Amino acid sequence: MTEQDSATRPRTIAVGSGTVLAALGVVAFSLTFPATVWGMDGFGPWTLVAVRGVLAALLAGSFLLALRVPVPERRHWAPLAVVGGGVVLGFPLLTTLALQTSTSSHAAVVVGLLPLTTAVFAAVRTGRRPSRAFWAAALAGAAVVIGFTVQQSGGALHTGDLYLFGALLVCAAGYTEGGRLAGVMPGWQVVGWALIMCLPLCAAASAVALAVEPVHLTAKGVAGLLWVAAGSQFFGLYVWYRGMAEIGIARASQLQLAQPLLTLVWSVALLGEHLTPAAPLAAVAVLVCIAITQRARA
Image 1 (spheres, rainbow, N blue to C red):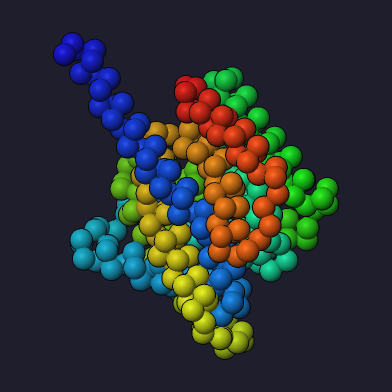
Image 2 (tube, rainbow, N blue to C red):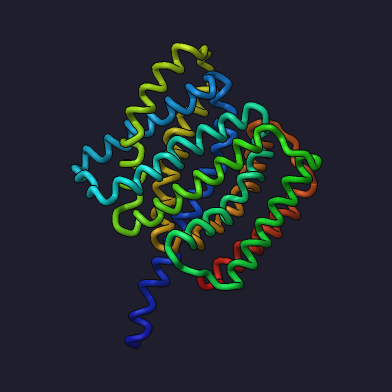
């Protein structure tokens, strides 16, 4: 093995494992909207968001405590607050409110703009400038998602779209700061401490919401709550941030172009929503864009 091979081999392994981890995060996230719809079968929207935050924080806190993880340095508190505000509180709340009037499949294609939004946030925040080929593929993927959204909605935007567009912004900010922090601490610790920071607010909100919104315990409601808490908010974010730390924020974000199409599959299988013939064509186009962005130098 030459010196050059020795220098490049670890990077190849890191990129490969990082892509797998980020892809696992995308699969976990793709179930979030259908699971949220299931969760609202037994819980009100505010209750569902608050309680999922409490459960995820307790899960994360048990790992942090068992492994005796030290408290993050003070300079990391502000970025952790952005992560908490974006992915622990903002995105779950705004998308849950949107799903009261929007279908899971419609919400999925609107939030499909998240990769491009995250790439823009990352470019501004980190000062890095992806290649023209990267941006061309990212814009093409976003165009596919927008076209698919318009086709699905019949050319009209739903009331819930305002919530979804707001969710795009706060989530992209949280992903960007979380990806940066995952370069200096393990991704699961980034998620864990962000959840712990939000625990007091989630606990207080849970007490109020449970007193105001009626609760009807059903199998779907409980299953949906458990998934969005443990699957989406803890496991999904853990592997996602770790993957971003290894392959870069902008490149990892483009893997999420596949998320809307995966969510459409889950929406049909779990919720019985109708899948239009345009979905396979959009899936192929999106996967092509993903392949290009993964090859382009970010």
